[in-house]
Image (cartoon, rainbow over all chains, first blue to last red; front, side):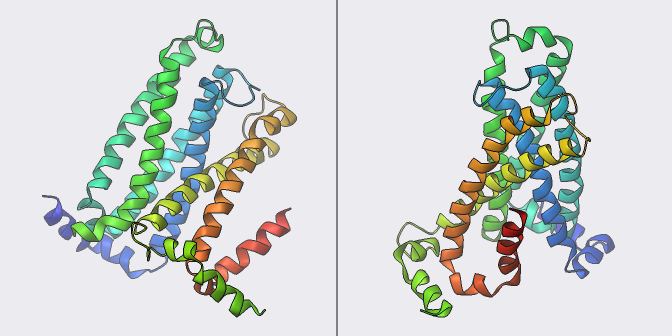
Length: 166
Length: 115
C-alpha cells in the first residue's frame, strides 16, 4: 500500500540528492544514535527513579523538570535525522512493518511522557513524596521503559528485515 | 603466536560460529546482540552526556557535581560493561575483518586515552 508512495519519494530530486552523497545516511545514523542515547538515558534515569531503583539524589520533580526537556530536544534531533534517512531510503522504511510499529510506539510514548511531565509540574509535592505519589507513576515507568526498548529493537531490526518485505 | 593466528583461533571458537549464525538456531544471534549493544551504548553516552553537561554548567545546575556523579556513574559503568561484553561477542564473529577496520582500531586507543 505504501510501496507506490515510497517509489515516488525515492524518485524525487531531494531523495536523489541525498542518495548521491554516500556520507549523508551514515552521518545521519550516527547523529540519530547519539540522540537515542540522550533520550533513552534520560528516560531510564526518570523511570528507574520512579521505580525506586538506584541512588536517589534528586527529587522526582527536580529530575523530571531537568531531564524531560532534554528528551524533547533529543526527540527533535531524532525526528530530523530519521526524516533525512526516510527521504534517502523510503522503500526500506515504508515496506517494513517494524517501521510502522516504531512510529506508533513513538507517538504513544511521547504522549504519555507529555502527560506525565505536565502532572509532575502541576503537583510537584504530591509526586515527590513516596506516600502520596499516584500509583500510575510505576505503571508509567514500566510502560515507558518497555516502549523505548521496543522502539530501539524495531529501529535496529528495520535494517535486518526490510529486504524480506521489499 | 602472531595476531593473525590469534584472530583465526578466535574465529574458530564455537561461540564465534554462533555469532556468525552458522550453528542451528543462531541465525538471529548477531542482530539481537547488536541491539543490546546499541541499548547499552545509549546508556553509556546518555549518562556521560548528563555528567559532562553538568560540568560545563549547561544542565542540572541545581544539583552538586558530586551528587550527580554518585547518582549517574554507577549506571555508566554497568552499561559500559554490558556494551563491552556485547561488543566483544560481535568482534569474535569476524575478528579478522574487524581488526582490519581502522575505526575499530581507533576506538580502543580512544578509550584508553580517555582514562
